Amino acid sequence: MGVFLGTHENRFDAKGRISVPAGFRTVLKALQTEGDALVILRPSHTLPCVEAWPSAVFAHLTQPLDRLDMFSDEHDDLAAALYADAYPIDPDREGRIILPDFLREHAGLTDSATAAFMGVGRTFQIWEPKAAEQRRAEARLRSRRISLPTSQSGGGAQ
Image 1 (cartoon, helix red, strand yellow):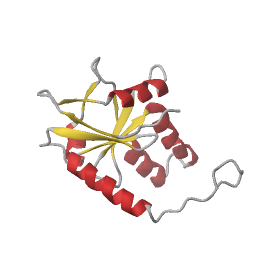
Image 2: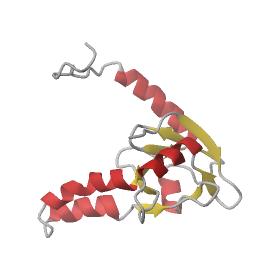
Image 3: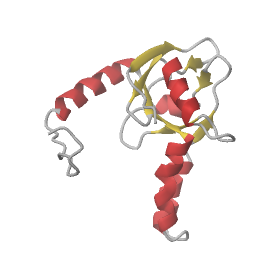
């Protein structure tokens, strides 16, 4: 499965459209199932950015809902958090999308001429460029304190 790599800054055009980076579109198309939107956009729960999910990855994210009682408050809350602010988007022929106003506001992009597309593996995020730069710097610092467990199967590097 392809992953989203790198950070790419693109400009909004006069109509408010912005191009999804070509490499990101390639990954999205490889993961797309016929009939599904190319990407699902939603506000991040914890960060001032827009999350961009391939439809299949978003479907996997929502599977735990099936384990909750469909008439419970927990199900209703999680369903509202995941679905109510999620927008399926298909870029135009040139790879451009229009971010809904509320998503631009959430990411601080209402007055920005550009946006940063930041690859984070199975998804990507859309940021105000200075905020993206700050996020990457903070993540690099904090990641130095993270230690991953070694592989128990013997297949990983030791």
